[in-house]
Amino acid sequence: MLTNPAPEDWPGYRRTYDGWGYSPLDQVTAENVQELQPVWTISTGYAEGHEAPPMVIDGKMFVSTAGNQVLAIDAASGEILWRYQRPLPADMLGSHPTNRGVGFWDDKIYFISRDSVLVAIDAASGSEVWSATMENYRNGYYANLAPLVVDGKVVVGTSGGERGIRGYIAAYDAETGEEAWRTHLVPAPGEPGSETWPQPGDEFEDAWITGGASSWVTGQYDPETNLIYWGTGNGGPWMGDQRPGDNLYVTSVVALDPETGEIKGHFQYHPNDSFDWDEVAAPILVDLPGRDGELVPGLVHAARNGVLWELERTAEGPINFIKGTPYVAENWIGNMDPDTGYVEYAEGTKPGTGIMGDFCPSFWGGKDWPPIAYSPDTNYVYIPANENLCTRMQGGTVVEYQPGASFTRGTQGDVSELYMVEGATHIGEVQAWDLSTGEQVWSHEFPDSQNWGPLMATAGGLVFGGGTNDSMFRAFDAETGDVVWEQRLNSGVIGVPSSFAVDGKQYIAVQAGWGIDAAGMQSRLAASYPDRFAPGDTVPTGGVIWVFALPDS
Image (cartoon, rainbow, N blue to C red; front, side, top):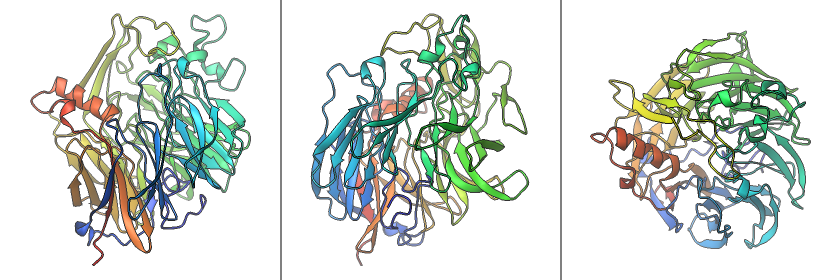
């Protein structure tokens, strides 16, 4: 079911292990999508950000929402079959109160409670089967990603890179909840990669203990090589001069053995991150033209640092550089090694403690966590991008670690300014890039909005996504980028779209529910440009699951 899902099902975060976000259903097309209409809706009862895909197996939908809950729903009728909700501790911090989906194995559903507890739920009844504490939330760890289930192991990661954690990826037995392995993404002294951190006797010799490298978006899996690919987050604290060195495996992709958790390969997108550029979105698995022009097994990542990275994955694990192409305007790359992809920073762009850095794209990146999509029909990758935004940032005093407290920048002397490039006509975009040529083929621009909309491609020649401050959910022509359908929903759409079929009828599903970083960017833009952007609280909130289909006639 997970390796080769039925066309009518959506059983994974991006449907398939390769991360394409592609549905092979083709009933809804660019020619008839104008007739798409709502079939049913469910209010979730929560006004926080809703980011999870509605996931469907054999006509039964499972969707996680804000409020730390999971709903099981008859996918065709919208009837709620059961509701699971786990109470959170009273002293739980409010960071990113969302959830990004569930995982499946056998007769169970796997859900990560925000207080870093992995829960197995009986798929038929909604009752809890077992739970396993992943980490202590009082130390700044929290979790909200969709688990990746591989061969009876539930693989998870953690949030909390802004709170002085030490990131990890871990696996649990799907039947018992027993931990099978745990791989820390900041190596301890003596472990491979530790040489890229301050050494014993250095001023910041203990930086690895609070080094960040969170892992809060689901990874991908290659069944042929039996390797997992996972993206990693920013370093902690934000200013890299407080943890000198390249800092593996921060802002990287790592290849792991799912049986042991051993890191078999890695590629770091930028060293000694000082920009808050999480690179947690795992690259998609797709064949690419290699350095000699022949097709090779590839990895494609539209990075928060504004570069579209094309990499080669190998059977043994090492990851090779093919090329890196900026997909939004950038000023931070002084030099990129043509053989390795290693980047040296342009002067004046990298912030530090008491050092002003002026860099593009902004600290929210050319694209944040919302996933890209890929269509094998066009061989295009589709990117929800934010162009023309930059940041001036300076770290304050050296940050002192307090368990669970913010661990980003010292307060005294701290500066963070978001600004638009002079003369910019827009911010949000949806872009299409041809992987055969490495060229951008189209871009749709949003003049008055950022874009935080995850994308989905379909065999009907469509790309679906929301993400704008007008609460629209749209369908684009996959070949041309023309908007061929749109509908205003109750709130902004930062949920991951999905598509499924029941009794031969195709449905499109998405959660609406504005909030978190999309709302935060809206507020920052309104503060800087009040004549152009309305305050963040003007975008309606409230979580609703929407399901659309063509009329029966």
